[in-house]
Image 1 (cartoon, rainbow, N blue to C red):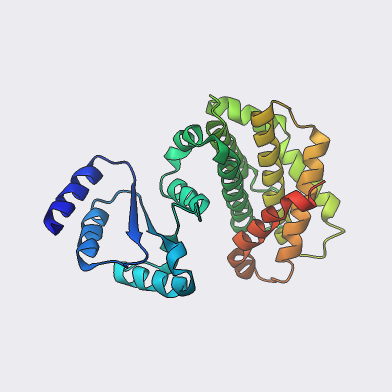
Image 2 (cartoon, rainbow, N blue to C red):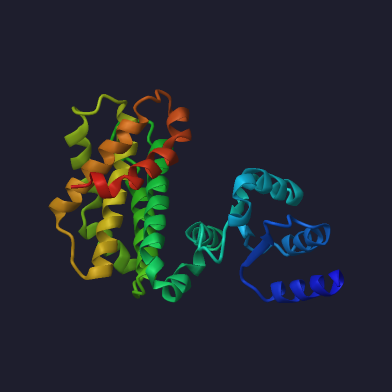
Length: 281
């Protein structure tokens, strides 16, 4: 009965590090399932909620998702539409799990090696956004990489996460050496002055775009190094950093205020990285 299901779910959840709750899209979320969900949510553990069999309700997908989110008291974006049999949106489910508990990155990469590049790209995108945000909110003056210390810390953390994704043992000291060996600060300043006369945009916005672009270039180059053993050349990283920075700057160009730029920062970076394969030299 419902009480037995509830007791079983709570018992298993108590020993779990992360909870993935699957509901049936064809049935919706029943009242007893809401009670189970509330009890599980009260445990305070990282949690991902998904609607399985979404392929069977595709014409009504938006309405079904909205109803499930409303019933559970969640924003619509927090309920993922998936199909286990058709493997629909399983990449989104994987990334949602990583978002909920980043400590699982290494374990998931080892269990699902064919998803490693997806995890690497996700890591790079998050790091680009963090570096750009750090530059935007900590640099009141128009000097590229004035926020060099927090950006370097973000890049070191990115290298550590990428190492875990590719199954490498790397300590914080070695990760910092990798970042510094790639000349992160010099790279940022070089790209900034390369673009400053080409991109008609406020200096602090260009510096923010450069923080994102050079972090992305470092991330892609280091991920390829870890995956294939080929150390990137400084020139290739510079060209990649300039290309990414230019694209982010172009996407931020319409926004004249810091607040506007910050609100659209993540979208600009995600769009740039999504076009990476076609646009990078």
